[in-house]
Image (cartoon, rainbow over all chains, first blue to last red; front, side, top):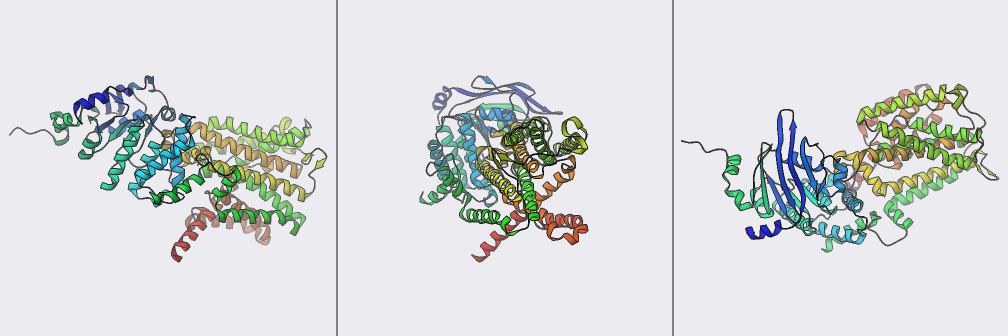
Length: 257
Length: 345
């Protein structure tokens, strides 16, 4: 994608805005003055070394953790003080690094949780529309088990895919994917990409945490880099690839001989 | 593409929201699965014919068994579906019983209204108590229900003006609508059976509804449930209120059946027994509540000579069960059945 095309994407409306968000855990600063925007129909990649505060940021946006300072806005509504379930109803849906599925329920129940959320948000969504979306998601993700079986029958990769399917099925405005591809094989990676594509078609703003650079570079329109709770760089994949600050964060500083 | 079709069919039939064809009842039965539907029908037949074959005394035992089943069913909603244990179900049962007793003896309200009053009153009571108790989580919450149970028992025993104190309340009229009076043991049995069946159908429908799914989401993973737009406090409280309504109905039926109630019936150890019953039967389906209730209430009848050793056997039995069948009889039976089937293939 050229930078011109990226600019075209930028013209679309802001869905999520973080304004100087801070979070401390005791002496550890997990997020320091983080500000960025997410746009409808765009994938923002969030990268950074382990412990950089990526998952914390998702937890702050979804309301699992409370923000210490700063504001979070969804379409100009301040959601900083709202509890997690209200934020979900405002259109923020997430997946977890380790899939949070209903372990004692069957696959169908897990999937319907997505439909339930979609219907709670917009009452006018018709059952047929939702079924159509579900059919498409299942076809793309290749999940074709007996849905009355328990979650235990699914492999780890399938569980991660199922969680992403459930998230997209809820028709989110903001979709936060916490390492949706970790532990997945090449075939499953393509399925994740296809699922993200469907979310984009529905004008979602997608936050994509991932370690594999090739995947980040191919999926994301824009990339933000975190290190020790600081946002150290933001830009197109090409800009990020050549950014000396980013290279230093990932590979360490070059020693003067 | 083609491979997906049968699975989507499964999806369509198990979800009311997306399924368009067929009547409501047809969909419910389809969702039940054929083998379960046949089992339920047979069970219903046996339950209908049972009182014709047994003594008057045993009919009364069966009545009490089904009332116990309704209380355990309420625990299935709260504990089995929503994951919130409770040591005060017997207290809620008592609230239901006292409401009916007071309404019929003091205000001379028609029994059917008293019954509805019990359900609504106990449901509301549970809802209000739940708003406070569910501020606590896990075992803190569980301990607080023990406290609440003790408070309720103390209230039943000592509030003489309201509950009759240690004397209890006597002369509760039998259930009836207009000239039709439910007096005999057998008539009471069918009345209680009808309510229990209705309650079971309601709970089954709840299991398949989006509200039921939100209960199960909270049971399995509260954080994930919150992130899927489920308000844990209110949802848990609704589960508690629903269990209160079930207990209220069971309490009213108990009042009508016995004609006399006192605080000795509504004690902590009965609440514990309900938990034991549901652990024994299994928390995964209403069938667990039924099987558990039948075993725990009927076995002492059959093993009367061993009465002194009963508590010992319970204790040992439960410990053994937790080791061998942690999912209870129904859950464990299902696992065995699955193993057997996969071996045959």
